[in-house]
Length: 466
Image 1: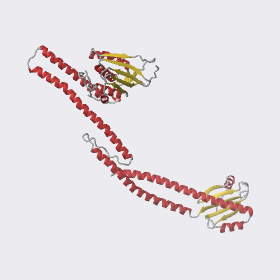
Image 2: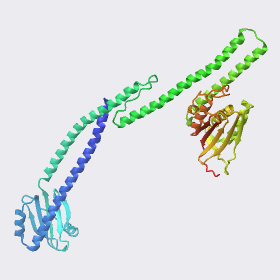
Image 3: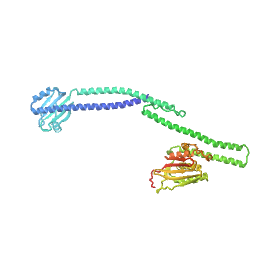
Image 4: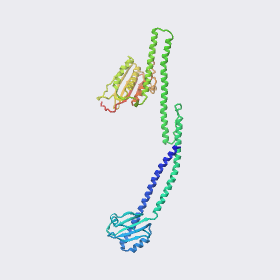
């Protein structure tokens, strides 16, 4: 109820301010127009008097007859004619009209600025002199329009009544309109309260009219779509992570149970320990990958950034691959170097970027037929480009769509079924590269191998020359 009243009050207040402004402008414009009309009548009377006096000079009786018998809307009329020496030679004042007093200074000013207007109490006065004969007679006419005060008072009364009626009508209309708006917002709020993590598929009704509420409902629906996608991904990730963590733990537990079931020789215990060690390594790799995924799932504002040289990161990877397997080989190609230094510097997190590059290259070594990954480093004006090629079994079009999904394992071809992994390496690399405003693309031909292209934005404060 309070919201409805506030909205209605706000609309009404704005409407009243606009109405008052319009009425004030109308009133003062009308008043100004009436003043101009009065000035024109006074000037017309002064000119006609001047012309009659020029034709019949010193004929006071004729002027008195014309001024007393002529019909006019002017009241409280006074007429003065001054000679060349600015002395009054003729005066006429209507009955019961206060005598008009004009100083010689005003007459002189009127001669220079004819026609010259000024106010004398409630009357308007005009001083007129022939512009071609400014040193001759001067006519002064004073008066006020009949009923102008009553007319303006009547206009003010009508305006006040109209404003009051408008305020009442607009207040009622504003309240009804605000009630409709608040009801629509209440419906949206009620619908939102029904949406929860268990019933996340529900959406707001947008309606047919594309107004502001339609835009609000559409924006909320789009937000809900993104949240549902995020929650679905989270559920799948937790489900897969739980399964992946349970498998090595179950294997370790079962092997230990078998080993402890009866006395065994040292050689048999050694085999069990070696098998458990492999499972522990796999479990450690899985936990480390999950933690790195969690770290890379934040925003760029939540990680430490510094200048990173991509060539130095790449040169550390061959030794890292040898630690994993002596069969792995990484061939680096840095032939396309620019003349200026620092072309391969970008702002980022060194540990995360190293993890992303290591995972992509490790993936290439693991699936390549000769366990060799060919890595080339090039650049454009805006991006550092790292290409990783292998001669593995390739990836089908169906698997390319899911290659960066967590726990997804493809490569279901000959001689690849014994290759172990967590299914998190490429997903982690994709998230880290995305976090650094970069892109990663894959081109693959089944039976011929795959090429991963990583684009990372360079340090924009530098200009490079090839």
